[in-house]
Image (cartoon, rainbow, N blue to C red; front, side, top):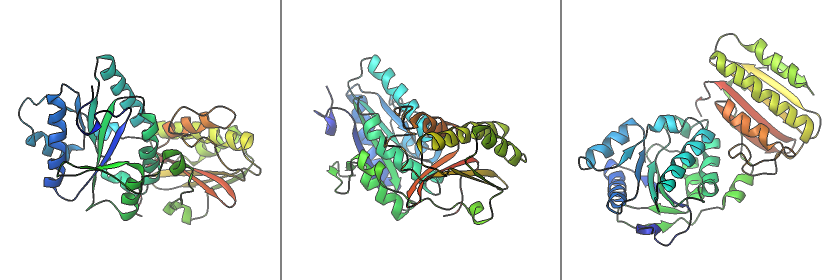
Length: 320
């Protein structure tokens, strides 16, 4: 039987904590976790080191709360979904009727790579809905930008507050609608220079060769190999499922390699493409799924001229 605000709820009970002080954060998190322990429910913290230590100090010794290495969990959206689904499945197999989790994204994800984390926050409303999960995602309003906070409001059905209330967020948007909306692609600074490579209708082999030629040792060798796989998949997708011409552009920066693949089609029909292994071969879903696991950032953009995928190997963060 589920307890607390999620009592009687079926599936995922997803909330945001929009905090502006340590006291605010603790006033929500500590009762939430201890309430789970008291009810015999798994209670898990997926915070970064600073806030994890803050919560750990606020809890009584031997509280029974589990702490995850937050930075590792949130390496990429796809890895976060896989890791949490495995964790949740394990708890359910052990008999849990509800799992409580509080988590936070690393600060660097709230900038240049926020677009795929916004998609993650929307997608998990579906991806975790087959588990009795009650989770709270913490966002520091002193740090998060207005755009991030607007997306948080649209991807979380409820807000948990220090007074113990759990209020619906009026801006919440169903995930399929949110994910289908066009999102502007922030221009990486390296894209302000002329591309190192421009190819029209390249073969997968030509695309891989272009990435290999751009490697000057500025990114780890494994990242280069992963990018070659991802670019090959995206070029193949565009040629097979998109509308010609397919254009590939590549930029090489001091700490990253950036590739865009563009065609004149509408892009994948599956709104969860890339984040969940749900797409079928007919719509290119498998290629995007592979690319989201291979690259340090994948940006998707629907525009008047078609559909563009941008793939980044190396450091994906830049000032915005």
